[in-house]
Image 1: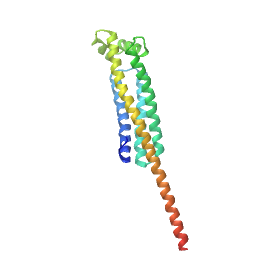
Image 2: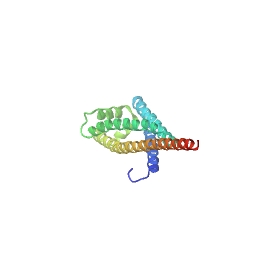
Image 3: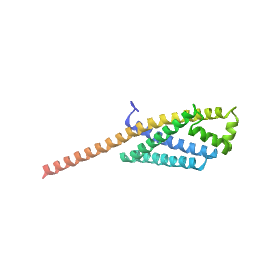
Image 4: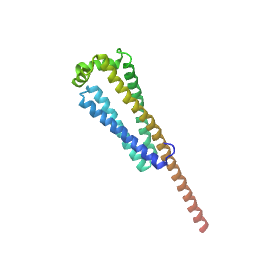
Length: 188
């Protein structure tokens, strides 16, 4: 975000909010197609709703230049960061041990979900299936975490830009008001 002009940074903020919402929708669709259980789908749908609201707030805040609308964008992105940090911890632990919650969940899915059963069948052992799936999940969540960190920074910068514009408009308006009052008084 350093080195670019303010309007570019506001555009980047909109783009990041859109990327996060689109990624969340894509993730939800993938999990629906995989036949994921209802609890996981409801969590994914909740986060998609948060990300969609975040994108709408970002677009509205920048279009109307209302800085306060960037606050939910920052908060929702931070919540996503916390959630993904927890998921990253679980997936990375499964790389080293078969006795972790994520490994147990993958074992349960292999038995109870056709997609996971077929995916696991392509590997020689259950341990290999868990390690490969955990590695893929850890890698993709790491990328998502990096995007979230950058998005929080960019959204905060957008918030500060919009806040400063609001302050500047108010100062200019006050200055114009004082000038017009002085001219009215001097004419009288």
